[in-house]
Image 1 (cartoon, each protein chain N blue to C red):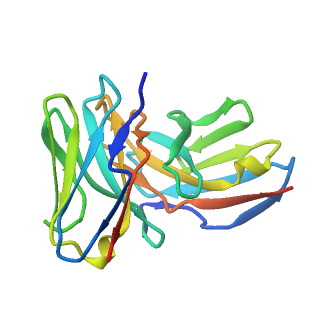
Image 2: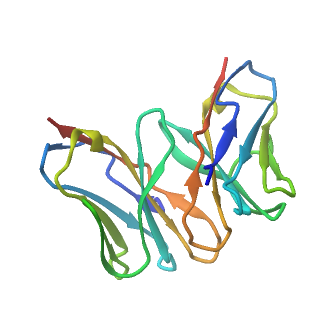
Length: 113
Length: 111
């Protein structure tokens, strides 16, 4: 069974631009969670989508948004990029039952100049 | 108080020794506990999960859970240099569908 895939793997943007990241979950998984990982803050939860609905949201500004499609693929968008948005963005998928194992994709490394 | 706490390390152990990684959590309603391993520049990969009090063994890895003390640990027996990585503790299952991660413990296994 194919794992979680994320595209693109690397991105370089400049301040003020926007970016869209994509995540395809493991086949059959309906929940996709997004995380931001930086050296100083560790893994920070952005939001979770289940069956095309945002079920959970972390404490990030409104510049961070996401959506999920009917095939469970998910995208996240960051508008008006700031230098501090440079990070590894990870998505994780699961069937969506509470407390079950999440499986991570390889991540998208975003550098904002 | 952080929701999931781990010692950042680095924890250095000689090859062949037992590495003991610890994690405490604040939400008493938590039901599911996970250990992920993350190599530098890579994404987290699942090592073990544990739901019930006590020990759970999988090869060289043993997870231990004590819900009364809100404590979960990971023991790695016969540590190898390839075990050198950051180990993340994650907690879930308190009615929110959220997973809370600790900041990770960096393990260095010295050859």
